[in-house]
Structure formats: C-alpha cells, structure tokens
Image 1: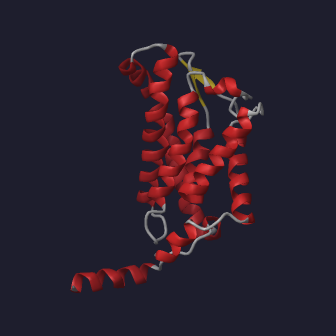
Image 2 (image 1 turned 135 degrees about the vertical axis):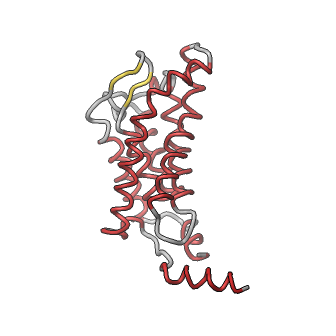
Length: 209
C-alpha cells in the first residue's frame, strides 16, 4: 500500500504525460457532438463524462492535470469545449464554474476510486463519479452561474436539477467503462493492486487481534 502511494507522488514521466494528453483529447472529442442549452444559460455536453473517466482512470493528480491541460488549451483560443467554444470568454460565462469545477471533480473522483490498494469496485467507482463528477462540480458551477446570471442562489440550484438525470446517466456509463477496463485492460490504470486473497487474509489477522 505504501508503495502505491509513493508511486502516486513520483515525478511525471513520458508515459504519464502521454496518458494525460490522451485523456485531455478524449474530453475534447466528447465535445464534438455539440451541446444544447438549458434555459439559455448552461450547455449540456458529454464532456463531463470524460472528466469522470479522467479521475477514475488516471487518479487524482493526473486526472486533474488532464483537465488543466484541456482548459489551458481552451484559454489560448482552441475550440475544445462543446459547440466549438474556446478563448478566455468561456471562463466568464454562466458555465465557467462548471468548467473550472472539472479540475476539482477529477481530483475528488480519483481520490475516492483509488482510495484503497485494491481494484476499483462498482460501488466505489460509482460513489466517486457521483460525488466528484456531480456534487463537487455543482458546488463550483451553481454559485458562478448565480453570480453571472444574477439569479438567486436557491433559484439557480433549483433550475440546475434539470442536469441531474443526464449526469446520472453519464455516471453509470463512466462506472461501466472503468469496471470494464479493470477486468479487460488493467494496464490502463498503471498501478498494482493488492490481490483480494491478501485483503481477506489481512482482515482475518486484524480480526484475530
């Protein structure tokens, strides 16, 4: 377990940077189908699904970094957000809080999904993507949306409930993808997990104490 945590703090290497770049590109590609607006304010896109995958697959540090890379490139003017949006203007609009919140969302998702030295389970992955990808992102997005639109915070939070069903669908998809990767291609996570048998033995030893 200590080895896993030590490896999570190691310096970035070429493989890490490549994984970050691929995930940033994945989030950008998920914006290609475009978006549609709710009440003419915040667009609904598939890109938050990419953020969920970034945190769950890459872990807290690299997952958040992949979002930072995407947003930094967007700030330079590249049209990487859904609907071909780019430039500094996207960071002062109603959806700015949600975009910035992606960084914290990916970090929290990674913390929860990779909280133990064991393979991510369905329930731990689902918890991570819901708490990080929905609750944390809303905690950033709703106040900023309220400030920009000049609507009361409570009213803004209430109207934001329209996003919840779609985000829950994306959370389910992210969970299925992550669990599928754990089984079919564990190398995507670039870490070593403690075998279940070892965990059971440790539990028995602790119970004996």
